[in-house]
Figure 1 (cartoon, rainbow, N blue to C red):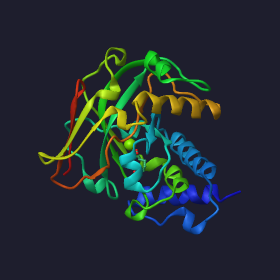
Figure 2: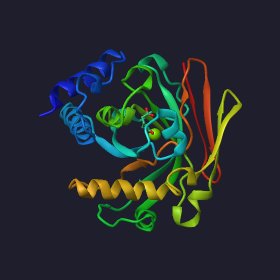
Figure 3: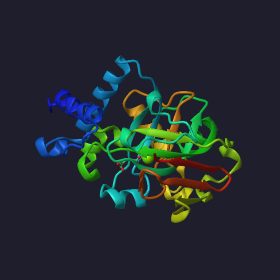
Figure 4: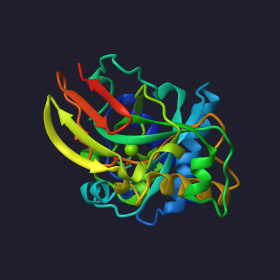
Length: 258
Ligand code: 0L1
Ligand code: MG
């Protein structure tokens, strides 16, 4: 037993109080990645009991830019909940979170169930209803976004809110690895990337997720949306700032902090 319930309490308190906490691993240095997922599972169980719904999943740290920014060099996954959907074009209240950041992602909306082992990027493309662009608004519950892999997995990989673009495309007709991205803050270019920044191709990240879930007796379910991981480092969302991601073929998506 590695204090799973106590750690889940700590994470939930940080979310509720909107107050950053120290790393769980400072108190429990032997916390493993599996313990992190057990804490994530426990918090998810409580959220479901309170009436939230799971609407998908997210990959974290699938690009080199994100791994370098966070000093954690391993991909991971978290859950997306119905409470997290933020309508495009609606201002976002920055003070509703602790210290939000935004990252641009390619989003898969699934038509078929997918579970490993053996799921490939080709299987992902075939099982996808459409792809669109998205912004993920992340909010680490840890001070200064400072964490180990076990900490951030326990914190549902900093999950907070998602915003989805409106252009929906069949991924079979485009090379998602070669899709370009321009990230702007207040009209200034802050980063550029291509879809290949996510594990060579964003469908590879979704295949990894399907294989991980399969190994845990779970699956990607029809209708789920999957955020395949930030293509660039995340940028702070401040009051008054406009953050826009414009993708080749997939259009653009903006969030405005108020
Ligand atoms: O979606 C993400 O890539 C977040 C995972 C890492 C946590 C973070 O950057 O806060
Ligand atoms: Mg993300």
